[in-house]
Each structure stands twice: as structure tokens, then as C-alpha cells.
Amino acid sequence: MLLSYSTEQSNPAAGSPALEVKGISKAFSQRRRVTKVLNDVSLRVEQQEFVSIVGPSGCGKSTLFHIIGGLELPDAGTVQMNGQPVTGRRGQISYMPQQPALFPWRTIEDNVLLAGEIKGQPQDAAREEARRWLGKVGLGGFERAYPHMLSGGMQQRAAFLRALLAPQELMLLDEPFSALDALTRAEMQRWLLELWEENRRSVLFITHNIEEALLLSSRIYVFSGRPGSILHTVEVPFPRPRREEITDAPEFLALKRQLSLWMREEQAKGKIPAVTP
Ligand SMILES: Nc1ncnc2c1ncn2[C@@H]1O[C@H](COP(=O)(O)OP(=O)(O)O)[C@@H](O)[C@H]1O
Ligand SMILES: [Mg+2]
Image (tube, rainbow, N blue to C red):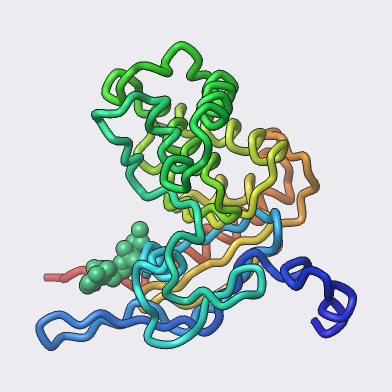
């Protein structure tokens, strides 16, 4: 750490992780009942790294995203981006929520342009860039269509594109494919992998799908049940560029088995024991 500071003095952000979350804890109180949701979570995303979080439902993953995005304040802990403290600050990230959340009254192109508009990017250049990308992701010809005219997968691609074209470097993707059928999901995974490999961004990705996490990520954080804490950190060893075929490799299958086992154990802990007569 010291070394990277002394050699990178001209640009303190270089060498710092895109995101560093340290010791985050959070509880919600409702009608005198306190629910502890996150317990001492620390993780990082290096520059241009793809990192995933997997964990049981309700363990605080979306809450962690809200904290990173500055929508919620943690009870303890800090958030840093590029070495700068940003705890509680909004506008630092590009965020794709669990639902595609396209505005129904805006065309696909205008939805994709939204992030640039908020930031005050010049209109013409932004529109041209949006059109180029819409063509690239198979939405050419749908620029003037409205969201309801598109399939679920196409809406997801548009929502993803909006996050991708946002000027913030760090993308947070909250289960972006969870509402899709298996075939569309596989297609979207391939698409995201290709897109990310040619246009590297720093990404923190929440998913329930272990295979998806292994295919896409450099590192995976496995969360416990609520209150969410990090149970395991897995460095994914497969070289890049990756292709879908790696999902058949013995090393891939072994890691998948290990992660599935951890997830099943965690999920089983959260279950109320069955009532036996
Ligand atoms: N604003 C809030 N007020 C009260 N409870 C909340 C709030 N946001 C989330 N929770 C609770 O925190 C827990 C974790 O939720 P969430 O972060 O959405 O989990 P996950 O995304 O892992 O499924 C849930 O029990 C949820 O009901
Ligand atoms: Mg969630």
C-alpha cells in the first residue's frame, strides 16, 4: 500500500481499488424491533474488475448496494471509491436495480440516454453513442419503440445499456437477470461476458446463480444468511477472455459444487425446522 502511494503520487486514485467497503454493519428498526441486516462486511473491487456477491435471499445484499450508492447510511463502517471516502454520498455509481425500471413513457433510446442527461452530457454526441450501442446489443431498429413493445430480455439489455453508458466508472448490478427464463438468461450471460471483456468496467454484481458468478467474475464473496457477513472469498482462477465452454471444465464444476454446498448449508440454517407429527 505504502509503495503504491509513493510511486503513484501524481494520481492518488491509480492503484487504489475502484471500491473498498470496510466494516459495514446495518440494522433496521421497525416498531421497536431491531433487525440486524449486515454484520461487519468488508470487500473490494479493483479497477476494471468484475466481482460478484452470492448469498441467501434477505441477507442484506440490496441493502449493501443502497449503502454503497449513498441511499442508506451504515451504522458502522466506511465506503471508499478510488481511495476517496464517499460514505453517504450519492451520484458516484452507475446502478441497475433488480427490476429493469425503464420509464414507460420514454422511448428505448431516450431511456438509454437518461443517465447522460442527468449529468448534462452534450445531447448530440450522447444520442449518437446510444444509437451505436443499441445496434451493437441487437436493439437496432427499436430506438423509437417503447419498453412495453420489447421482450423481457430486450428490456434488460436496454436497462443494462443505460447503466453502461452512465459516466460513473463503477457499476452495481443487482440480480439483473433474475426475472428472465433460463434460455434468455444464458444468452444474456454470454452477451454480458463478451461486452465486459471488450469494454472493461469495475463491476459489483449480485446474483443467486453460482454458474453465472463463476463464469463472469474474478472474485466471488459468499454471504451468510441474515445478518449478512462474508463467509468465503473465492478467487476465480480461469483466464480471460473466457468463453461459455469453461462451464464444462472439471475445475469449473468442482468450484461450482463447492459453492453450491456452501449456499445450501447457509440456506438450510435459515429454515424453520419442519414440524413433525
Ligand atoms: N428500509 C428498510 N427498512 C426496514 N427493513 C428493511 C429495509 N430495507 C431492507 N430491509 C430488510 O432488510 C433485510 C435484507 O433485505 P435486502 O437487503 O433486500 O436483502 P437481499 O437483497 O439480500 O435479498 C430484509 O429482511 C428486509 O426486509
Ligand atoms: Mg435483493
